[in-house]
Image (cartoon, rainbow, N blue to C red; front, side, top):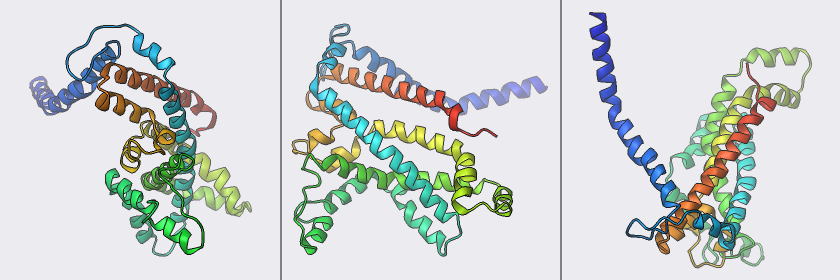
Length: 295
């Protein structure tokens, strides 16, 4: 009787997860395998294309656009990831100290997390507009010359990075806040008795005990920034003079696949990006033992 009941429960369990497994198999596993194969073909917008071996990858090695896009993507990672993690920890720590109206602050700071990236990009595109933007209006009021934040190659990547950091802080802030509230207060009470100051408690208690959460956010944010596309696409027009300095690998993939119809070459770009993210993630996992505190 128990065996029959167990089989019935297992059958219903598999039936319930079948739609999820089907979607996972079609839209992830099959799509990845098909994309991997397409990277070895000269496939255009229509048709399957012919198998050309490693020709697409050889082309990548000599493609100046790919080199620039890869360098820009690394700049995004170097600029945005530390900024998001550090600012999120600082804001979460301040909210965890019991500020007045902290609930209101949490709600206001969490708004970007529930806002569509398209809306964020379009609002910031208006704020940073050369002629009508609020930022340049403020500069004019102060007697300074306006700045082409999105079309000047000197500023375009930093403008997009600013928006990315602003949009990403809210999610990680909530995660860090949850991590802070899980730290037992007995550690802080003992440290106060021993005469430890605020900064000493932060660096010797808070950060070590928060390190697993920091590692999680660091890994996820790194993967996310490597795939930045929507903010660039919506904030900077394709033909803008600021695009070469802000173009990412995913933007280059989109341009090759949907504008130039070089789907084989575009697939090769995504496979290279996948390998780069995999390598960085493995490096992060190997370095985890050196600084992540394990209870």
